[in-house]
Image (spheres, rainbow, N blue to C red):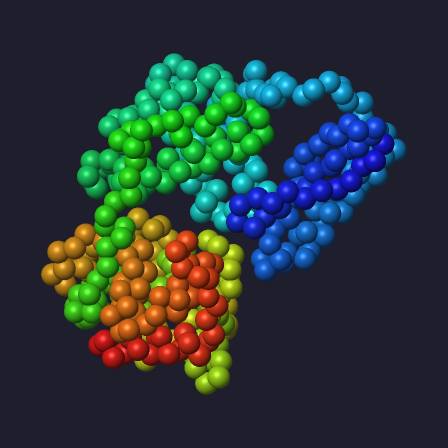
Length: 386
């Protein structure tokens, strides 16, 4: 029997390892629960070497002790699907996400989704519901519960604890991803989320796509803040509006990430969401938004922000109210602000997307790599807008 180690591409650039058995025209796969991370992830070489070492040990054992397989045509649905509960599958999905090196924030979100699904099932008396029995009607009922009944006890003061539109959308996307993986592993016959009509699903809130005009951004940055936390959020939002850097990356930005390249101060990071490298040169206004540096340690955080994104959003709303801005927007709107400023300044779309750190442009545009010189030219044009 021939036994080979194979790789399967996953989302976010990760790969899973599995064994493939071959004998007299018969093939069989064995999932190992081992995963490789993208080569540009810190420590990837060591992480992947350990994973491959474990895979080779399993391979050697299988060669010495070949498993016996039923060579009949495999069932279209795994045997374990007959007893696998919905909650047990979510637990497996969370563990798989950890193996794929999802960031802590993503893991916490998936664990929270699990908790809310369990609360729903307990309320309906269906805690032991099997994964294969989850129907369109069940998903519709779950979404109605999240929209109309569920209230976050930690946010009762904010809209009575009702979940924000974007939070509900993220909940739906996670549920859909969980069923997609189950579908790929032949545990279910279809993804019930895909059967929902448009009106039965959640939708992205408009404020997530909101942006500030140059005048509004000036007013936002001119507000006299009451606390140090408020001031840090104000500066961070301003820098994100100049660079398009996401909140998660701003929260982990260190002074060592700001390097001088060809005489220009440049933020150089590996994006936490996409794992792609990003270099964004800083224009004069962006430099003025950096807080005073307290020491020479390159590992010191640039912005000492409050940890919870919900609290950061509160400070954003507080500052925009003081500035007299009537738009309802969130921290992520700084990325849309950056794109709007760039277009206003006359920057071409390829350069905008490069500064934002996207891996590709839309399907109607040709992918373009933009040199650092082009990025410097793009962000320098911002100064003319102000």
